[in-house]
Length: 281
Image (cartoon, rainbow, N blue to C red; front, side, top):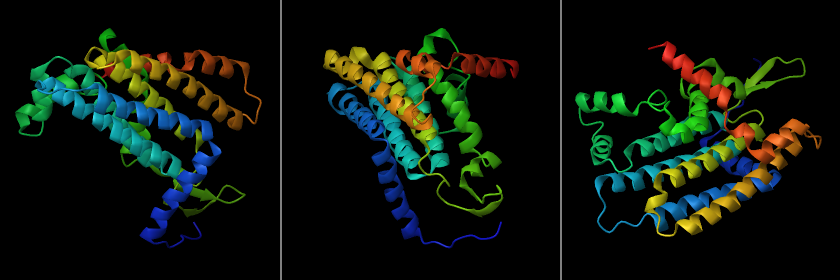
């Protein structure tokens, strides 16, 4: 390693904005779809979930939905800004919120446990016995979470813990593939795969909110109509990313997968994840 460029905190913060702008200027369809995810999150949380006198599970559901929303926003911003490791770490938290939401619906006792998780060791143990991600979500009841559980597992390995893989995106190499320096931001900040993954995860998080809370919405038909619009925007965004990734020559199978959403289910990866955790019991 031959050098390490000294920088200031101000410059690093400035780079986050500049990288975000450059990424989204290049991936316009992705940005539009991401803004639709953002808007639909806000519609659901601030307009559809209206509780004058909420039960504990309803209050928890609003807060948990907001937690998923806030985490997803920060994940998307960081992915576009060239901080894919931080992005995945925050996305993992967004997915955990979605999992907790699926456990809490109509259950005041579980909602109270979520509120009081950190109160003492007994609550923490009880919480873990019910809410631990991913192994408490392998049943058919939580099938809507399967793609998100796979993403959660990937993030756990490459972004959350102090593993070597966490730093790989920070290596800058010369023509002979030797590491010449380390960068705070990713060496390739326009990481289309990471940005696309976060976008699709946002789509799946919205889908989870709709599946779990649809009976609570003030205007369910409006939400479903907006979700159908989002579905088409996600398809177009994924196509535009694939166009760039394959230089305009998208393989027919990839094209079919995008148009049918067949590769969003991550079935094989989920089954492997499930087997791995069950074998550890």
